[in-house]
Image (tube, rainbow, N blue to C red; front, side):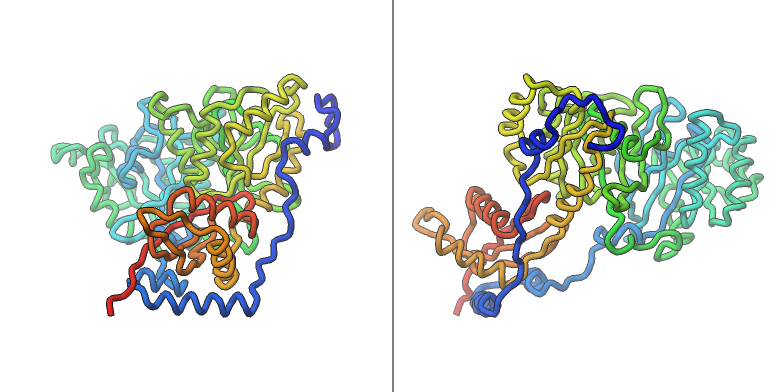
Length: 512
């Protein structure tokens, strides 16, 4: 128990953990023997008798060219979108992305934190950063939003400065220009809300800001957005001058996710020891994911606090609707997700759906049962039964019982994050894998269907993060048999805390 934590309704800490935490895993031996290598070579040579295409050859060789969506975010140039409140920044971001991702609402000030998105134009991937409205004389929450906008500029390679052409330059716009000039970053001036040729005269008044030619666009209708993006691409370097690869071994990105009111922000604050950036008494403050560099278990991690995921996205309205979508995006950009469940309440479909989203995204997973200080003896057996029934699909996920409010066992999350990431990054040598598949097929062959019995010819682990296996077979492998293979893979090689993807390539023998 951590120092300073008292009056916890769990008199026997060890017993509680033994009941609900994942048991200690045994050490897995991934070393391949000479016999494994020889057996794999024989199976690989046998595969030459079957029809293979270029993609098969690339998978088997393990050498292929990275697609644009596989280039690490840290290497991509960063384009920040700034401007005063309600000039259409988030609408412009959605136009560039080609989807409704940034929170858009008629009420000024909806976007409160910096939000990063991966975008692409003319074949060039880049990072687009949406920011809150910039008021130079802001107070309170608005002042912190303005600070975030300045940080966004400092961490960008180029800036799009959005001005409302129907209003013209304001005192706030002129103050923003001064900050942009001090930053020394390339700036593209965009005159938004130019919905027709008749409105272009309004854009001409923005020459007075001294940032060069204003680009007239209509973020709402898309008018002029192509020319604007062409100009923005000319300002961006090929590789970000402000980014850089994550240092070896971390810090890794962790998304704190779960349905509303399970204690996500409380957990982040508990780990930090203070209130995180842009936390306010106003309900629904957590809309945009917020990144924080923290230390957990003696190691640095980047934690992302997110808005609660609602039961059904279409049942939410306004800012909450798009915040739910963006929470899903936070899972996508993380390496491991901590799904927080309120242990004092019945596990719901919402909790299970959040876990499924993490699995579908292929991210490492840790399940944290929060509000353990509110648990009583009567509730515990019901929780165990709910876990057995509702979470039967993730027996491989590490589980930890915590109380974010009292900080009880919060320090234990670190070791579970390490375990999940180790499983997520595990690679099985090809020789060891095929020796395993050969033994598995011999002991438990695929059932005969329509007089035919599919046979596994060869297997390779095509990727990690998450582990992805490609099996070459003489026929389609049924879903039940693939689940059997996955279960045996976990028993043999561990893979604690990570989903596993298994794809099958059915190949026919070459015609002589």
